[in-house]
Length: 336
Length: 83
Image (cartoon, rainbow over all chains, first blue to last red; front, top):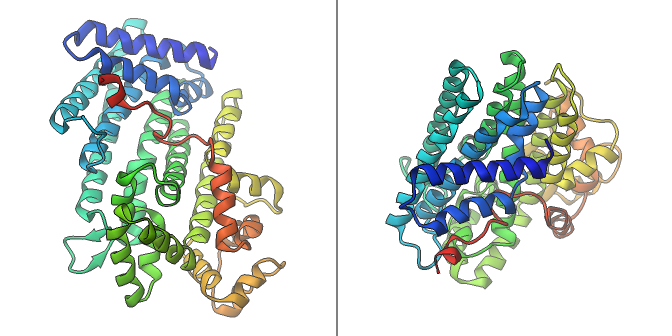
């Protein structure tokens, strides 16, 4: 199945779920979900590619990708509500209701493979996989929210979010969604559980790598005030607060509070972060995540054309570190 | 990968250490840093990026990230659909 044909099928599947069960919801919400799929299809292909890589029927990946996308849309809306980053004119209560509808629509889509002859036990396993991953993501979101916009751990007096806290939250919020997309697709194949875990590991590190790119953009090319309000929970800031002197930490907190509404404070914040080495640290960590994702993929027992596409996607997510890998010697070895 | 943090900190705060990054041997041992084999090879792979000053590194990262797949950057505005 070509990527374009797959995308068309996923959008048709999403429209089918809406038509059958949610006529009363605004048509705008329904159109938004399919247009979002068409405008950002790269990660939507993960269930297809991992299904193909493990010998599954690509057609079975269609409702799974549709379910994943609906859940992803729900998470996006809830994230904006929780970060107080909703677009103007959107009422939080209505958006929460829409996100709830998207979540149930995803559950309906997950049942569709039964109609195509996929064994009920496997459909149940898929449902369990989706729900368990969703719980982990919600738990991480809770920890993220508890940390507050400046990355202060509210339960510990004057404690900042630690690097360990950051990696735990980034793993669950950034890694888990793409691990889910990869695991769900691989579950449709004929390979043993160890192979399914390999693709989930790939997706996890791919997702964390995407998160690092998002963190960089949030601080240096913010889309709006919302990105800056939550800047205290990005890797650059958490790292800086970890290595900074007490005096520098006080300055950082002051700049973080002012940056969303003060371009001068934002410029100073960026300058302090760069001086503390956050860009070099982020580069090293991006290289590490790229390495771990690639090593996981190359350990799969059944090399497939789909693996090549997965590697291409990995390289595209954070091109600077990918380029260095291919032009530097020696290559990072496995192990450790 | 525990030794990566002190390497970065030295890169940022110690001009002599940063200068050495552009040469073949990173003087980690001289600074009491013990790298695993994977850490050492990772630093080796990324040496040319790590040797850049912060401003040049930022430009390079952002330039190459332009157009890269991101979580939601290119998604349509929901509000626009409701107008």
